[in-house]
Length: 468
Image (tube, rainbow, N blue to C red; front, side, top):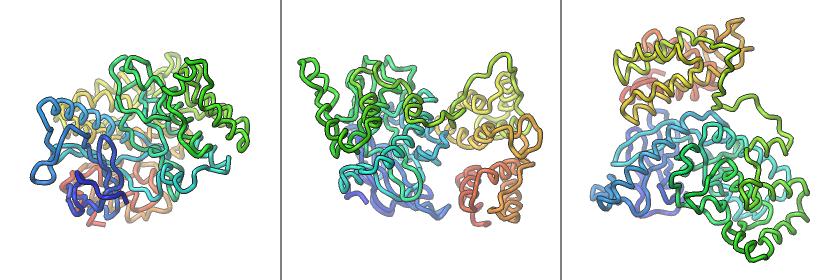
């Protein structure tokens, strides 16, 4: 647990159904708390948007108020970017990326609700054990985070702040990439002003200048610098320090570090890290796929968020009626009867349910409602990526035939039946489809109910869960 912080909400504060228990961490853009979810009866992590120097707590002790009129503009812009982070993370289904389950606004600011994981940050670990002595452990860490980054980059987003403090070592499970506070701007906006927040030692030179183009190679530098810290026991020199030395015809300061690394680890690993932290962007790996290929890790056919355009020769595969109906139902909650016409028209133009939901979300005026819509339809997007060799017979599109998917043995048939009955109160006939799809994804009762409760209006979630 983090030390007390003067601007943090006090223990016991309620944010809807969440009760804060303490502070987990503090950063330049916000505070992360551990909280108890009274609906699901479990701990969660909640990140509050609270940028330094832009807002203060009001006398009520909860609400945030911008300090000045000028800071209000920056505060609101940052809050919008915070929402972008929520929407991005809510769409990922990757074991190496922190899982966001909900976004909400209250107290004049925004909150991200995430899974609470037990473990410690890599930076905390390195304080007690300065290096990772086993090369196999280093490689496992490098591969896991590279895979997570590959999915981030596939959606044209950057992390921009990879460092030991933003990698979490779980007690049970692979490491997690945390804090996408710098992943707020798509790669196609690179020519615009970028974040001024950099972490010396881990940030490449291009992150110090707004006019320099950033890309996956920038995150690769941060990851390489983080791994070098794990090998050498200390952060690398800053990119500006390295460039200054090279321009003065002096040796790159990292050369001395690699002399130590080369005595304790394989030349193959050492050469890879040198490549990843090359001062010149063009001389680094340009994609994480290159890093994984160097390590001999087979390239997966599709990442968990990679859309991939279908070739003209292959033709378009129509989305099934059940899928179209489910998307229409969710969209109608936000824009009313016009949802039917919009979904039908868009459904004829695209063959990927993720493209469909992204396209339709633009017609939802409220940013929070967009996030809710994308979260509600995430299950449809996940199922649309299942391989065609699914157990659903010979159907060309198994994702639209959830009624044929048997419930896993770990889920009781009575639980499935009750879920269908209770959820139908809110979803009508679509409840059966949603329940069967969810059952196919979940391996435990808690996980199953946690997914389903997201389909229920917030004020009815507790009532829904109490039925079980």
